[in-house]
Image (cartoon, rainbow, N blue to C red; front, side, top):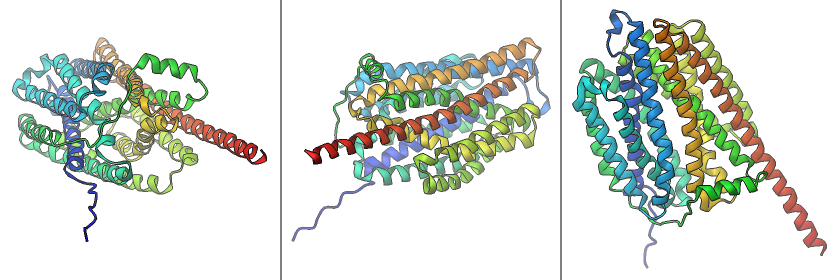
Length: 440
């Protein structure tokens, strides 16, 4: 009697995908928290006092870094989509991993000269993430069967959250005690592990996908009513790009400013509030339904915007910690809904073969939002510098991003309502068709 062969969910490829997701998150932590903190503190010792003109110049550098990075990232998807139809997607992940390693190596070996090459680092970082994310975002469907994807994504999310709990505080301690050079060396080791795991991913199947963005956009225009939820999803991604990523950057700047540039404080706050966000995720998964979206989203955007107003009125440790707590703990709700709808709406509208097209359009909207907020940040640094230094326009930039966050939440609510309406209209038509068949 032969034993039935069991299908392993977490084989080497699945484990490697989770590992790659977590390791690239460590690189994001390194760049978004510690590299940005270092650029912000360039030219002065923040514990001895702040050179306001230098601070404004540094904010311009940060805005320029992200504007270039997002421009390269969003435009890159328009070209990688053609190759993704035929080339193994794990190859893209490996190429991206190598490029990201090159960026970290560049930061390590340049030392203090990195401030003269911020545009170059941004371009290389953009190319690295273009290859990595374009391959990674389309890889799981070819590696993990649809039967096991719910369990796989649950484990993947838990490991990703654990990464954001452990590494910010550990890396913050390293940079405080040993210095930025040692931190960059550790990240190089992380990059080596990322490259290794990227070569271990072996897709089990390959889907034939189309990639013709112009034709896809034309189809959206022809089917205006049917594709309303999809268009709402794209606009929600624009507002997400104009708020989510810039909030992270602005928070890093304000924490560095208020806490005298303490990187360990920056890492500790991120880790503590990420732990709390796991509790939020538990309530979201337990109680969320499409019709209850407003009940989750409205309080989130109201509390986050109230915390933004608090920082604008009084920038101190209390308002910064309150904002960081509210934002990190509650924002996971909006991000979870947004992530689940990004690919889900395409499938619900029976546009499976256009996933690559939809991803390219989605990244365009997301990138446009990110570039918009990065330019606002850059201009805030310019105008604050013209006024002799300070944070007036930086606070106005924070207010702008706060308004974009409200639009992000409202756009998700609109998208959910359109999906529900379309689902109800479909059922009415379907029931009417069945009645006609019965009568005949």
